[in-house]
Length: 191
Image 1: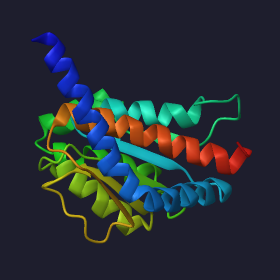
Image 2: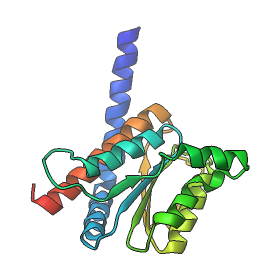
Image 3: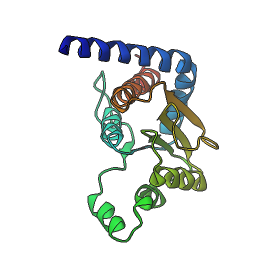
């Protein structure tokens, strides 16, 4: 029975990666080029995620800050999911939807890209963050699941993980971050 579960999970993940990234490969390459251009113009990649994807946002930003596959200078990527004090203050005041937008208003500029990782569930904090990013003139990117309950209009780069399974989506989002970082490193450092 356990072997069947493992086999099923491996097959599902392989199918997800193939379905999600082969078709969207050109768009991902274009997005990576935009990230390179942003870094070259002193902009930053600001990564946010809801639920378990908040941890993936942290991992993705770390790939750029530290390294993925080679020793190189840090690249300007930040995850905005670390401020527990702000989160609890906003929850206390009934304003949890402002968690990311408060940070974006303080940090983001028109030179930056805001990458949102969504688990597909309705989350007012992500919708608010995308709205504020657009108001500030930042480029926006969204990675979400099929049948997501988040608007994709007025987003510069939109990617869909071809699944409704949150566990598979978490793995797919991390893969997305790895591929994005590899493409950016390749462009910036010639690998």
